[in-house]
Image: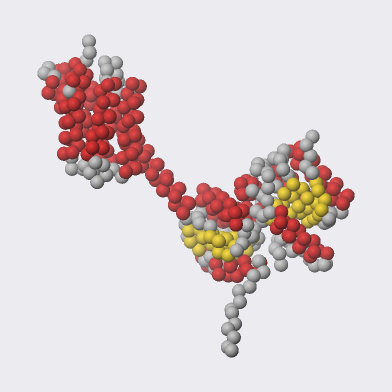
Length: 133
Length: 285
């Protein structure tokens, strides 16, 4: 079976989805990722979905779930590179992914993650809406 | 035996065309500003040629016969092009119905037997009437296409995405926000966010006449989609009346940054981007 690679970069995990997700693949990714966070003790996860052009409600929920699970495991998750059509689809499906941080591209996502992690390590409270203060 | 009327028309084709042209040119409604006489003549000739060539014993009694399709096609093309050029329905109608006059004129001159003349005239009348109906159908379709195109253009024009600053986009919405416009607004905005790499979008609704729960729903959708793209969305230009309706309708906008004016929205955007506008100090030396 195909597998989506999870790369480790310092205390961050990098997931780049290069193929269109199907249900089994998404479920496998969810399971792999939580295992990986546990194993590496990562503080941040960056999911790049710039190559995903088709999304449905199931996939939307899985992405939301992954973000929530990582948060439970004390790792911030940022979804980057969402295509406009995908964003519109998610909103129309009634899945605005509340509570998931999003960024335009990998670079911005990295910045956002680092800011979040720095804030946390300095003992400051993380603000819920993802603004860079 | 070939139908007398058809034979007459085939023989007198040239005369029919001349009479027809005469009728058309004599009409007060002739629009020489829209179409030259030569062009009109070419159109008339094409139509008449095709009509007389197709007219036969088998189809003269049946105006809906499939054999007339080429004629109807030519008529439709003429009708649509006229609708787009701005001819009135009356002018287009006269084009077809004056052909009937010309045809009947030719029959009258050639057929001596009154009963035969009556029968043939009736048949020709029926066919041309059917053509008339087809012409109007396509004429109206042509006008509708024009209207549809204009609607599209208005939708395109009325949703410009403006780059007000590096990384800040503004989108003034003028007019009512319905679902099809929300779609266009969203697509344009998200596309521009990707192209410009902006991280803040200001949605200015000072041009929206009224906000009901449906419009609010559309606004919330746009804001959510912008967030998914990794950009922050600010709604500005909220008039006091709109604030009242929003609260009365019980619409929850608490998750969205809302500002009264575009200026204060821009200020907030600067704050988020950690930019500062400073008045320059001029040193008196």
